[in-house]
Picture 1 (cartoon, rainbow, N blue to C red):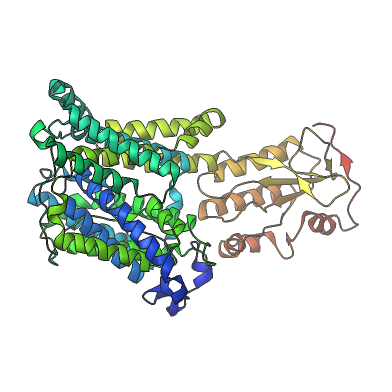
Picture 2 (cartoon, rainbow, N blue to C red):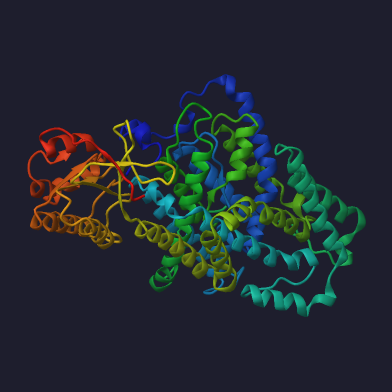
Amino acid sequence: MQADGDIRTGSSWKSWLPFRSMQGWSPKYLGGDVTAGLTLAAIAIPEQMATARLGDFSPEIGFFAFMAGSLAFALFGASRFLSSGSDSTITPIFAGGLALIATSGSPQYAVYAAMLALMVGAIVTAGGLLKMGWIADLLSVPVTAGFLAGIAIHIVISQLPALLGLPGGSGSVFDRVSAIAADWDMINPYSIALGIGVFLIVFFSERISARIPGALIALALATLAVTLFGLTGRGVHVLGVLPEGLPKLSVPAVGLEDLRTLVPMALLIAMIVMVQTAATTRSFAGQDGSGPDVNRDFVGVGAGSLLAGLIGAFPVNASPPRTAIVSETGGRSQISGLLAVAIVLMLVLFGGGLLANVPDAALAGILLFVAQRILRWQTFAGTFPQAPIEFLLIAITAIAIVALPIEIGVAIGIGLSLLHGIWSTTQARAIEFENVPGTSIWWPPSSGSKGERVPGVLVAAFQAPLSFVNADQFGRGFRAMIDARAGSVKHVIFEASSVIDIDYTAAQALSGLIAYCRNRGITFCIARMESVRAQAALARFGIAGELGPNMIFHSVDNAIDALTRQGTPKPVVNTTG
């Protein structure tokens, strides 16, 4: 099964040339790219600092991650708009996992993060090269909503100490809440005012226009307030002077046993990165006349994590909000991302002192805004009355991510998504079709109209792919319908338009059903098997040979004409409902 964009690009070697996003670019687009790049930099600078602090890294590490993600994607990605860099969705996950094997903020913690970036980058890049874009569809919308709700809670709890002016906590969510409660009498009102003020500025700026760099404006105002009113002397914590200069390329030194420990976390992070990258690519595809190329964008984002690991940063991800900014402000290529990288680079080289008085509470305010933005309120409201079971998936996933170690909670969410998909497939039932009077259409029975049956003919369908999870249900369902009309059924027509594939177990069940009919003197045939994959499976498993020549038909009516030989008997109205 090919992912989006593979149909468009095929296997041509030209589709893998560098700077794919620049194809068709014209100098007339430069103005839009410059505007988008300046806006992107204004949005990314405070966001990357805040996300780095979310993971217990120094703010400049967030800048390194952004530069690595953006440079690599411009070189290897396909999307004209996608922005890659540090991301608040995956940062709490790997930060929580790394904190279990190293002290947060320690040199060893940074080494493990860099190695994790290399591992995630390798997995995501391999996923793109192997055309595994389909893997992004394994997380259902409700489970994704629950996952994001749990991440939002983690972000809020982790940022409360900075917002309240308290010492930073560590450990589980419950440990952090307990520490906040214990230090409640140390709350700093100036920190609260700064954090809430930043949150409100960002919140209302986005409501007015997504193009307004609310985070940068709020950060500048908060820094100005700290400087003018001497708030550091009133207990407000600030970043301090950041180190200036570029990082050095190196491979993190991690032992074999530590590598094994990082593997499960790397797989989880890579899965989430692929899901978010695919969603971002698809959301902004077609606005430039081209379709999405999910696999190529996997390579671009994966390469970003590889480069991030080599310069001592952490895994990167596609950012839907930043990508939207590029699209909405007139960006037409990755030139906008490269311009943003150049601006961030100047800040890294010469602007460490400019950020000295940025208050921690301001970064907390930005992250609180991010937390409320990633909550899927519409999904919550829609699933609760319409799909209670799927709403339960949201709740279980969110609770698991909050109550358990975060990487275990994410694994549970992914498992629930897969189990829900498998469960849905197992609920398929064999159903008898009836002819819509006056037409050649065969349709499931409807309470609104009476269908028609052909005497001696049972037309039945199974509206799901045939696989090991429902093979037994398929066989038992057909046999039950045949037995219910014992003596009156001479021909069974399997209407297979809904069957897109057949695996080995299901092929055995289908073969058994053919033998069951043959032993009772009943003719069994297949009609409307439109899926090429299912047709290939019939030949591969020998089912076509078992059926005999000319027993696979293009339509139900063709099958009835062939089976009755004397033409189709007059249909009779089904009066049994």
